[in-house]
Length: 87
Image (cartoon, rainbow, N blue to C red; front, side, top):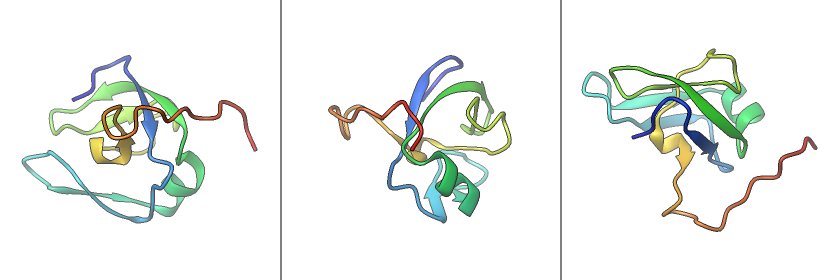
C-alpha cells in the first residue's frame, strides 16, 4: 500500500485493459488509452488515497484513479530507473 507523498513508477508496459485492484467493492480497475499512452513508464507522486485502495496522482492532476497493479514495485524490478526527460 502506498501513502500520500510516495513516489511511484507507472508500469512501462501499461496497456488498455483491466488491472487487479485490492478494493473490496470492485476487484478490477480499467486503464484507458489516455492513461497508457501518456503516463506509462513515468514517475508520479501519490496525492490522495481513497478508502478503496485507489490512488490519485500528481502526474495527471487527479484526473484518473490508479491501483497498485498499474505501478512497478521495487521487488518486481529493483533495477528499473525511469528516464526523467521527455522524448
